[in-house]
Length: 465
Image: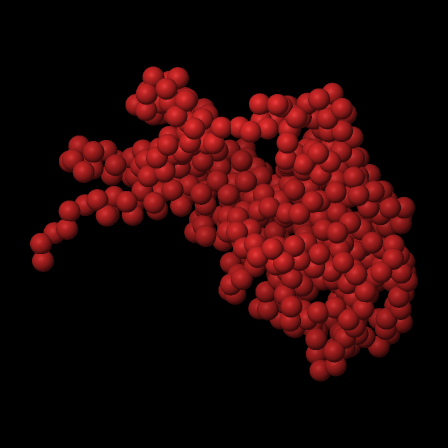
């Protein structure tokens, strides 16, 4: 590498590092996301007589219902250390043994902490008959790459100063390896909800379990009629719901999710405990929140279907489907975790699969073949690179990233293209209120910078020993 080129590389790298550090500077997006962290203050909140919720200790809420001769735990958090801390806090309230654990669904952030609550006598462990259905196809097919994408979505590879939160959860770093969002096999269910609804009685406490497909097909909502408390699992949290997870997920039915929320509104609850974030208290507010939440999910489904029937493609649908202002402005439906656009694309995919309906896309050019033609159209590689730099300078970051992708499709080792894409993604992250997208942008930008740094180190001549 020539001295001028090396100097340019060092200068660009320094600028990108500064940009990465500047990501923490406040703007409207980061202010909103930072304020969302108020939802994760560590506390044990009593939401009704004999009903307590541990918030902020783990990445998900853990609830306790105190019965006559024992307690029921609803969800258990993700990691052992946090779960043990919650168990200790619960023991300050009561020393009654755990008689039952109920999993609202099989994601590991709700099941991984179960060992902390087992005690000397194994409790009943209730779950849906489809428990683990999301991860089952991955395992059967030998798929592992969702763990890479899951780590990007969650920001596990980012330094603490670049993580604000995960939208509906505090920023945590798992101490164990393995799958990011699948269930821990250490404490498997012993009892199952097989139909739509089942009434159980544990420790003198009557509970109604209802099949509530949404984020997963094995979702359960728990109704505690004596206290009028509804435990919604991940069918509800204070964010627009994650109708599709960018880590990659099997089909999430937007229609069934809306139906599950509709059934929840019939309970006349005075307390709504979501899988994450602070509970909603007060009958009127619970009813309004659940109604708005249901309406938002239903709107995404119905308006997308309307657009599909007009022949619109997914890229066109995300412009066509816009939430009504009353829903878009709701404090409970801000896109901290899920995003309406992803719900639109998920709905299209659920019904029609990968093909968008445009005949040109039946057998599209490969990314490299398309990029070579775009390069020719632009007047050569240097012109294309110049266009990418211009887009970056004009703060047209999405276009800059896409132009960089063309250059990388032609030559994946193009250091300048990697640098441009890294900076474009960092800029996109800086203005992104959605935590999962923000984490994904920043993680990929970090990976690109590392590739540039490693390539530069290999290119340097070795100094004589």
